[in-house]
Length: 182
Image 1: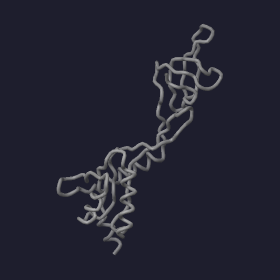
Image 2: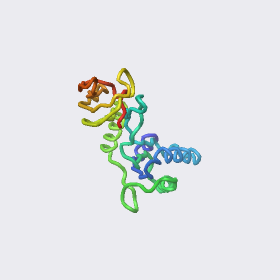
Image 3: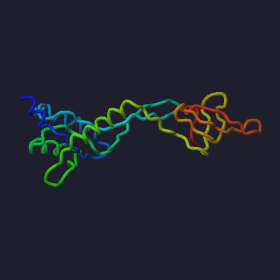
């Protein structure tokens, strides 16, 4: 019996209002539970990646959506479930034709789930500075000095900055957390 139940589960792409994916997921999960439809629904996936940013001199890891405004839902594709998902505030429509949503093919969902898993595991460092950009040093012995980015080393989260010290331009390597754009 369980095997036929698994086979009837399919993955559908749902378009939501951008930025409301988490809110839609919470409301949908609550509605599924209230209506006792847990057996008709599987996973609800919002594809995200981890991104490291420098804020106020500190490293902050935040999630960034890979496909803003979209989420993927595993469910039985019957009319009742489709209506339920469409009735959730923030859901605009399913991807597919106007009359019937088209489920993802196994290869598509496998590739998507692998991409989501890999992007959650690896952390991407957002490079906050560009070569030639003017910056202020906000930490360390050169605090309040103004310089120009000469080179950026994202893997080490450092930048080579040209600073004028005693009338001479001097290259200094500083961490991203020690710099602020002007």
